[in-house]
Length: 67
Ligand SMILES: [Zn+2]
Image (cartoon, rainbow, N blue to C red; front, side):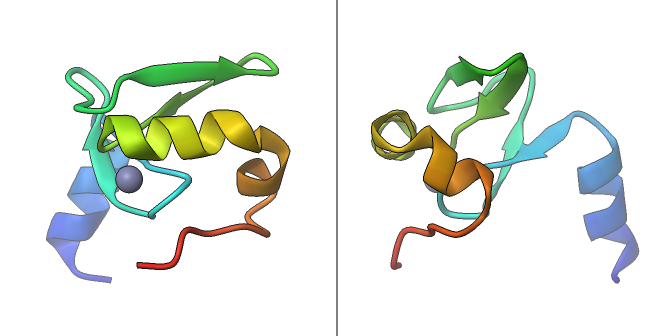
C-alpha cells in the first residue's frame, strides 16, 4: 500500500460506503448519515441518497454502486 493512501486512511478520512472514495471527515461533500450508531461519510449527495435507500446492503459491503 502506498504511504499516501495509508495517511489518508489513518487521518481524518473515511471511505464512502457507496462508491469507495475517500472522503474528508471534516468536510464531507455529500454530508454524513448515522446508521446503527455509526457515522458514514459521503463524497456527494447522490451517494448519501443511495445509502439511505438501502443502508443494510451497503453496510455489509454486499452492494456497490456501479461506476
Ligand atoms: Zn460516493
